[in-house]
Image (cartoon, rainbow, N blue to C red; front, side):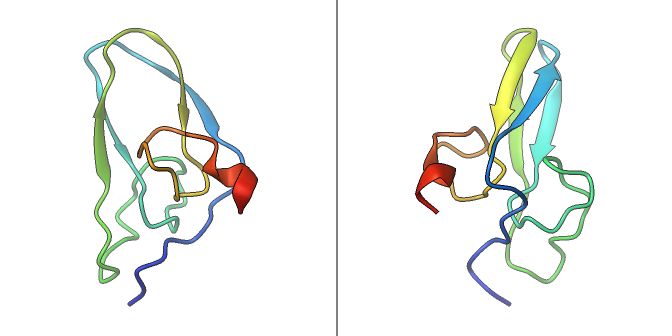
Length: 80
């Protein structure tokens, strides 16, 4: 078990979200359904992060898994 997530990609995942819908962002980096959880975090110590869309539109979900604004991108990937 590690306390460092795998980097899924070093750029954000742009996703069209729907107002009121709940999304579960992958925090471990192991999911095959990036940027969303597929249960691959089992036995890792990571848990998915719940995100509820406040409005319809594009959201940039963190791809590097190191954002300080999880689950959203804050540009941390540019420093890795």
